[in-house]
Image (cartoon, rainbow, N blue to C red; front, side, top):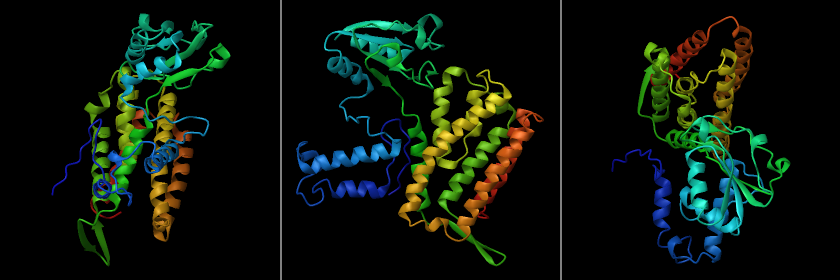
Length: 363
């Protein structure tokens, strides 16, 4: 059976082993005689499933113990009603309106409580965030609602305000899980890494092999290099409102191949940043994506008993890590002496060599 790879926004491709396990447990989950959909939500079997799901989510997203994890019915739109119905007690709630999503939240909440718009950037067409010091918070509000990442209008809070210092009793943040895009890409890469070799050939006295993961990463890297070297792509600059989409795409492809610079550059180039700020912002984005995808790789390495880091592979990882520090050191020294395009072209050239080496089985 030929299985397509589905990258839909909701349901997406799952490893075949996961589907086979789900199918086997549909009639009898681990010997209890019932399928998951037949269980009581109060029964010990389902409680164990929910507890494991919460533990996995806390581990993947580093959720601290003082935060609750709630598995709610309905999508994000339904939460706009669930929130005031449970927290407002029919009283007043403060809403900070910064874009389309917080507008929808405030509109729905008006059905259940007295909504007070504490701040709004509607006059600026939702292009700037109102300073927390300008928020007109109510003395008797049950909570303050803030959407930290307005993905439609492209404004995002990189640091959350100290609402306690502003006099708010509690805050509710609608936060978009953008790091999960990198999680998805890294998970897909782990799935590909277990597939058998596609082609082998002899070069000198050594056997070279082309595996699905080498082919996939090689194609992605050479594709991004082609974009980086393209004069037309170099002139492409998307409006700032598209930056959240750029974060999701660069996070996904960063997790999948480790290469995300071409996409990120297109989204950041018109953000009005200086050369130093552009490089610094790109570096911070890369670190965020790397932190997420490395957690996935760590789990895969741990499951294999760290065999991948033994012998020559371990030396390769060590050499690559040292090279990264050396590159960063000399990059800082040269940053003021070269143009931004020179940096991009140099990196693209080196990445192109790596991509070709992966496609031909030399690496």
